[in-house]
Image (tube, rainbow, N blue to C red; front, side, top):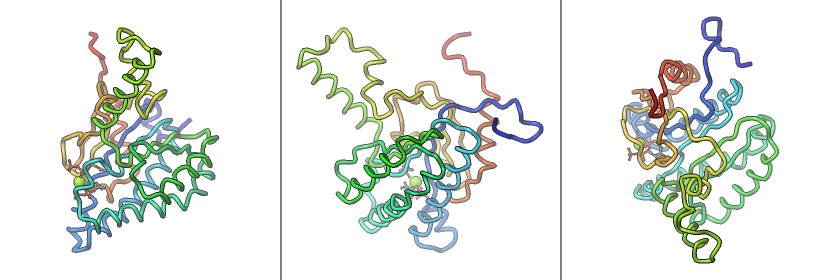
Amino acid sequence: MPNFGKNEEKLRLPRHIAIIMDGNGRWAKRRFLPRSAGHRAGAKTFQDIAHYANQIGVKYMTVYAFSTENWKRPKEEIDNLMNLMRDYLKDAKNFKEENIQVQFIGDLSVLPEDMQELIREDEELSASATGMHLNIAVNYGGRDEIVRAVRRLAAKVEAGELQPADIDEQAVSRELYTAGQPDPDLIIRPSGEYRLSNYLIWQAAYAEFWFSDILWPDFKPKHLMQAIEAYNGRSRRFGGV
Ligand code: IPE
Ligand code: IPE
Ligand code: MG
C-alpha cells in the first residue's frame, strides 16, 4: 500500500494521471537562462515525478513531452529537445531497475531514425515491467490521433472487416494510441495555463483537472500529492446524480 502519511491513508489514487509538462521556458527566463536550461531542468523533474508516481502505486501515467504543434519552435530549440529525449532513451537501463513499462505515443514516423530505434529498444526492454505504465507523448496531437483512428476504421470498412454501424465509442478507443488503457482520471497542467493544447482530447472526456501556477521544473512530489488530494475531493458523477 502506498504510504501517504498519517492523515492521508484513505486517499484514492487516480488509476491514470496525465501531465502537461509546461513552463520550462518561463522558468529559464526568470533565471536569465537559455530555454534549453529550462528543458534540462524539466527533464529532471519528469524523471523524479515518474519515479515517485511509480513508488506510490500509480498504474498509468501519460506525460506530454512534444506536441504536433511544437514543430513551430525554432530549430535550435527542437534539436535541443530531441537531444534531451535521446539522453533519456539511452539511460533506459533505469527503467528496468524501476520496473516501469514505457510506451511512446504520437506519430513517431517523422522522428530521426536513431531515435525511433532507441524508442523501439526501450519499449522492448521495459515490456515485461510490472510497475507503472508510462506513456510519453512525442509528436502527439489529440486531433492527429483521432484522424489516424478514423483512417484505420475506414480501412477496415473498405476491407469488409467492419460495418459502419459497428463503429461505436469502444471501436474508436481501440484505434487510439492508448488502446486498452483506462482513460485519465486526473489531468495536471502547471504553468498557469488553462487549456488542453490538443492533449488526450478524446480520453479527457470525464477527466478531473488540476491547474497550478507552478512552472514544471519546480514541480515536486508534494505538488503531485496536492493534485491527488484535490482529486479526492471531487465528486465524479459521469452524468448521473
Ligand atoms: C514545455 O515548456 C516543454 C515543451 C512544450 C516541449 P515550454 O517550452 O512550453 O515552456 P513555456 O511555456 O515557454 O514556459
Ligand atoms: C503543451 O505545451 C505541449 C507540451 C507540454 C509538450 P505548449 O507550451 O506547447 O502549449 P501552448 O502553446 O501554451 O498551448
Ligand atoms: Mg509552454
